[in-house]
Figure 1: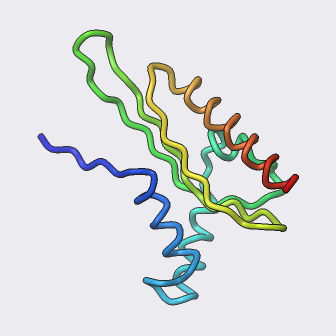
Figure 2 (figure 1 turned 180 degrees about the horizontal axis):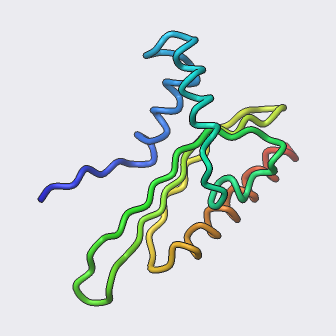
Amino acid sequence: EDEYQISAKTYALFFRILYNATLLNRDMSEYALEVLAKTKFSKALRAGIPHNIPLAHKYGIRVLPDENAGHAIELSDCGIVYHKVRPYLLCIMTQGKDPEILASFIADTAEMVNEAIMHE
């Protein structure tokens, strides 16, 4: 059975298309981003970005069968961080055994990126 895989670059492209309204008109692009900003997943990117900074993001998790050691987990989170000085796009894709560790890694990375952007 073939599974569709997407790269971080392609994942980010969807957000760029919405942000720049290059596929949908401006109103529909803004509506899509408003819906994505209501994502209830509070781990990963959302945990690493201060809550006063809006975030429109989409996360995904899937279990990959592994014949030798149980199951591997993929956790990805990608979105637009509406930083007041400079909005930016951040996509982080991870793979491992424990989704909590993966979510913490994404949160820690998002926090480091946000700190770096705030101090530019």
